Each structure stands twice: as C-alpha cells, then as structure tokens.
Image 1 (cartoon, rainbow, N blue to C red):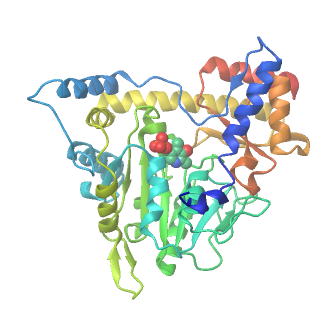
Image 2 (cartoon, rainbow, N blue to C red; image 1 turned 180 degrees about the horizontal axis):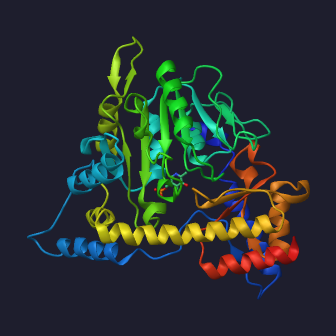
Image 3 (cartoon, rainbow, N blue to C red; image 1 turned 180 degrees about the vertical axis):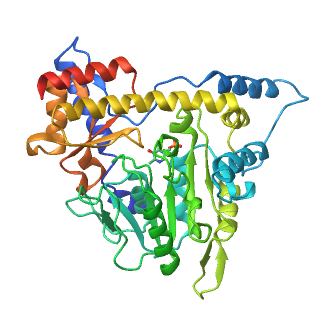
Length: 409
Ligand SMILES: *Cc1c(COP(=O)(O)O)cnc(C)c1O
C-alpha cells in the first residue's frame, strides 16, 4: 500500500463546521417545522451587482467568438485587472504596489494555504489565537509542526494570544519567529489593527528580518477614517510584508472565485548560506508551475468592481452588511451582552453569558432561539467563552434572530 503523508493525521480541526452541521441537523430532525436562523457562516448572501454581472456576461460572450476568444491567459492574471487593482487598491491610498507585484488567483484560501511553500520547513511561524484555521492547517499538512496537545495547539507553532484586555490584537512575539500571520479586519474577532499597531509590526519585522503575511480579505468593511486598508500604507512594509486580498467578501465573489496576493520585489528571504533570495521570483515560479490562471470572465467581472458604477454598487452591499452588524451589536448590547467587532468588520464577537462555554452557548442558542452562530473555541483555545455572529444575512433574518435572542436571554 502507498504510504500517506502522515502530517495530515496530526490535523485536529476540520472539526468546527462539520460539528456545527451535525448539531443543527440533529436539532432539525428532532424539531420538524421549526425555522432555524443562520448567523454562523462566513459566506455572503447578496447577489453580485449589475455592473459586475454585465462584465461577467461580456467575458463569456468573448469566449463565444473566435475573434475575441481567450485560451490560457497569463498565470499571474490579466494586465487589465492587475493594473486596476494597483491603482485603486494601493496608489489611491498612497501605497506603492506595481501591477507586476500582483498575482491573481481563484481565491484567497488557496493563496493563504500555498504561500508557506516558499519558506523552509524549519522556519518558525506565529499565528494569532483565535485564528482563521487555514493558516494553521496548511502548515501542519506541510510538516512544519509537531502533534497537537489536548487544547488543539500544535508543537512548534507560536501562538499569540488575543485577549479582551488587548482589544483582541495579537501581541508582538517575545522571541524571534520567521513569519507571522496577521488578519485585519479580523475573522473571527472583528477587531482591526490601527496605524500604530501596523507600524509596530512593520518595525518589529524589519528588526527581526521576519515576514508578515497580512490578510486583508475584509478591508472594504473598514469604516473608521485613518485605519489603513493595506499594510503598504505603512512606510517600510514593502521590505517585510506579503498582502492577501480577496473579492469574496468585498464584492460577493465567494461563488465566482477571484483574489490576489501582493509580493513586493523589495521583499527578500535567504538561502542556507545566508544569500538573499527574492520571494517575488520564488512565488512567480511556484504560481506559474502549479496554477494556470483564474478564468477570463471572472477576471473581467472583478475588473468591473473598479469602475465608478461598480465601486458604488459594491460599496452599497458592504454598507448593507455593516448595517446588519450595527443592528446585531446594538441589539445584543441592549440585552446586556458584552460585544466586540461589527464596526470595522462584518463579524460580532460576543462574550458568552453566565460563564457558559462556547459550545454550551451554541447549544442554548440553537435549542432555545433556533439561532446558529459559531463557537469561538473552534478558532483556538483563546476563543473559549466567546462566540462569533456573522452579519452576512438578509435583514429579516437579523431582525428575527435578535427578537428571538431577546426573548431567551
Ligand atoms: C473568507 C476569507 C478569505 C477569502 O477566501 P476566498 O478563498 O478568497 O473565498 C481569506 N481570509 C479570511 C480570513 C477569510 O475569512
């Protein structure tokens, strides 16, 4: 028999969403006819806006005629999309990113999971706790960790505990690590890193010659003036940071699939002899060997987000979700809950009442209010006693969920 990659056998999670599914299915089977309201998932519910759909159709029509047909495109993405992104997402904010430093893909989850391939297996990674599980599991699969302990923490990974006292911002590591995942606005806590926080991270990374992996999947939900949308708004970040962007949450592309990452040419790693190596060239080699480009119509659709009408329509959808977030925040606060997030992020992070564990509160909410959320403990040990609600829902769902919660708690 073929031997398997035993690193996969160390994996503990893949447990969170299946377990939620199992409990919801069991409840629904025992209570037929009851309507369950879902504020648990990180998936959008509103349709793609008209300008995006029009461009998507045009892309498909181009494929229907020999004259405009497109076969394989550039692995790194079409220039029309890379240039639009460089201008609107960076230049317009005073950040320098060249179009050829942008690598378009079919999603940020893949980018987040794949990026670790360009770092040596013995390099040390730090992650926040709680954390988006992809950052951790991809490194476990690659063999960069030992086994997990009872709390689910893997040997060899450095965990940066995010607490209520520090506003759920990860502390700087107290010893050297080689690369660090940062996610701002944060999934799951809804917290955001402000300019001073990012400056501290960039200067730490420059001092330690470490690399920051900055996941900005939720940047379009930032509402506060002065909060950077890109790490490259911080001077010196081009030498220490890789940034991940996705059209999934910003523009409703979770089903359409399009994202990109940025690796500045100033960013360097080194080989065993200490000689500098360009991470941009390594990633370019990796990307063009293992990836053949995001589909042409999807890239056409993504580029339409940067037109004036596209921007306006996409912004209106994000505003809609942020109104949901405000309603959830205010509704829960009125009922005495302690809540965070929801002001610069579509997630609300609440403290479970009466000292309940995350899963105990999940069961109470499901059984007594028929509302589904996500237990904080599923995102890491530090999430125990916390709970995530998502504002990606129709307004009627949000209002009814709040009414039900109000009757029970
Ligand atoms: C949703 C999400 C992404 C984006 O995933 P896609 O594969 O682009 O849909 C990236 N990072 C975080 C933290 C997310 O929640």
